[in-house]
Image (cartoon, rainbow, N blue to C red; front, side):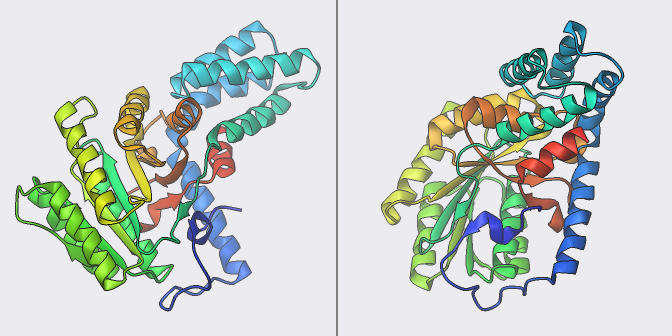
Length: 333
């Protein structure tokens, strides 16, 4: 079954007041089918990149040419050279031992292996801290602020949690205004500072507000920055240290938004950001506009960072918890 928001988060006790009621089994199943159809459509370009090569294997015997074509297709979809080599090597080994006979069996086993690749680390978000502090980071244009706002909305409306949104992007007025609109929409408290003030001081005040008001979650939105900008990466590390001084153990979750259209560059981004701020999870955005959706598998496999959220469109409901088996099925089926 597709993952619900309540499956993504670890919480204490019963649902808080204000949480939306659970849907009936029939409605929940209808919603699940609809979400899978939406996910499958969003991965259409990536699936097409794989489809021709996979379809050809259904009609032919499995041989060296089959494995070569499959490797090319997976690399083209940005699954990554290392991940591709291991997956295709395993398939070839199992086929040689008689464990895979025919193209349809190959398709099924490929899907299983991609699920295994996608599942890495702890893909939950632990909300048992009071407050739980979530730090959002990413390169400019990845959809970080929009993701922050949507996450706040789901936490507030579906789980009934009180949320503080912190605009630590103090150099881009549009980002502050955008986050303020999301705060109003989500019913969240909003903390901002003067233009061009020190972002770490705004983050410090935001966490302080969360503590003083008894909020459940504080989400700190930081400025977009290139992973190659050492001074800005240092600033991000400072924000993280300052948050920890305000509340021991914080931030409890550090989410990196990665634009899936960037392909293998997204892997490099994740690598450098994780060195600076200890990334605990990924948000993979813009999956609906790329043939490179396999980057989710490359990052999970190469860096061991779990994908926790995916963005498959502009709508509020298009930010979804990541579910490995459904992702693999949507990619291959």
